[in-house]
Image (tube, rainbow, N blue to C red; front, side, top):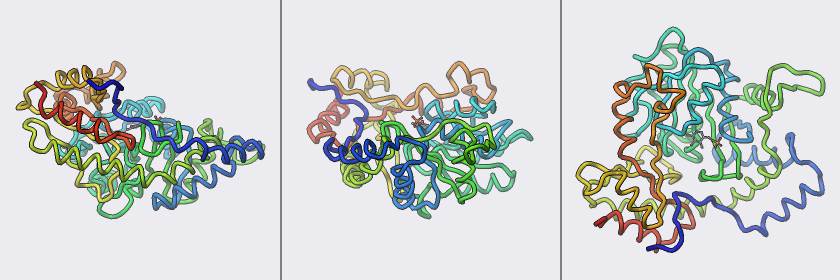
Length: 370
Ligand SMILES: *Cc1c(COP(=O)(O)O)cnc(C)c1O
């Protein structure tokens, strides 16, 4: 029995002494927020790192999602996935938009593009897909549908920091992409998020929206919100970026070890991430199939008894929560693949500080659960 609990993730923190000089600058300047110098610097550094043209920082990913929908004036119905964190669909309800759930592809676990068209109605204004676990959506198929029906595409890219698909950064697809820098994500600023924008004009509009709609001292052009990232979070982000490549390298090792040592365990399927030309190893999902000796929940429980806290992301499906389950698109008969995957999935611990001892201990329990 392991004496320390092993959680699904452990936030990456840089050495504290490296953060002190940043804090001293903030204390000297007295600039705490409202587009301060660290905010500007982090926007530029992230554009560089992510290879995107324009990006607007936010206080968190959820406010960024809500604002992205506002920025494009999305209304009516939006097609989205039930297999995600609940904030994806909540951002629609906060805008008075009706979510329309469409089933997922059994391999990528993302929205199945072949099922999107049947869900489009005269009220559909956008598609809100998620690059689940960092796996790129079928961006080309989704864009073709969006162009044919003249609807927008906003990607919830909360899992996809740094991910590349067949043609470079996955964040360049769609009309907007939304990132989260929450403590549990691969790149964290404690709390934080961003919207990746295609052009300077859109970014300016989004910058106005995140600052109450102010365009100057006396002019308010929209019913904006307070979505600004503070200097504290932005400074931390700049420091985190310096450590990120090392953290990703360790995640990559852990991912490869899991794959190698679990590949011959009957009934355990590692989710394929081949669509990621550059991966971020944010999650390590496995599917517990019928030929495994334990049920998914029994394995989940067994791991807990051994002080290993995997998580059943994403169970229950968003469509099962009380504010969604009355929708006709939320019925299980409409979502057979997502319903099945939600019953099979466990995300295993993966984070830079996970030791090889702990990793081998987790693998040993899964390999021989008796
Ligand atoms: C984390 C997450 C969010 C929300 O981001 P916050 O920064 O926590 O508000 C949205 N969607 C998905 C898929 C997420 O994983």
